[in-house]
Length: 265
Image 1 (cartoon, helix red, strand yellow):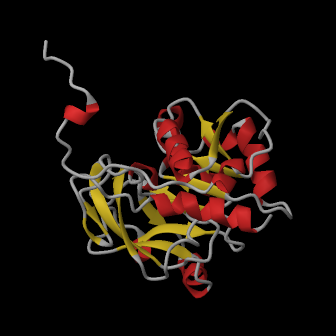
Image 2 (cartoon, one colour; image 1 turned 180 degrees about the vertical axis):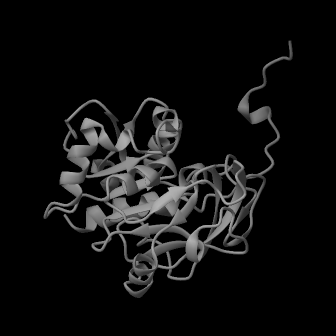
């Protein structure tokens, strides 16, 4: 067995240190839901923590949102994608409370990532639907996205038109909607994230993510929670070259909601 080395003895390729976060952000509680088949709940919780907030685990069969200030519906294959991706999870008791809170006067911020995006369309918190990729294959790659709307609860720390790089992994990632809905989304500026360079799944209008009318509910297929920690993210970034696996462009999604909620207090 190889001898263990102290961290100071390991030759690091890049600087993987984390910036100091604002202590005021730690008071923001962000719930992360777990369904049977969820895969990325711990990743989402870590992203919240790295952004400076407090991650709160929420169970699919509960009706208690535990006084959270925002909710993340994470990626995975809830209920094995049986019936239709996200369809069963959309009927979970916890989602009844999420729908109620998102539509309330308080406008609870809700983020759906990949399978979470599918769940949000199934609950009709977001319009349209997700179907099989046009090439009928599972895809996993680092994807360039453009921020087309930086006025939502989850994108306010970005510049409009800014490009970021985050991982993408899905097989039911093709966003579809009727012509009237697509026209409405475009006219109202509700396309939040758009694929750049290549459309990986045939999504209409290169749409990678959208928002509801109030901008508190956002869904996207790529995974910002997998691009939050230098040393464990993509090998590239929208801001230029980065150290080995140093891309952390996705962190802004989570700092956005924390800063938005703190500034509103």
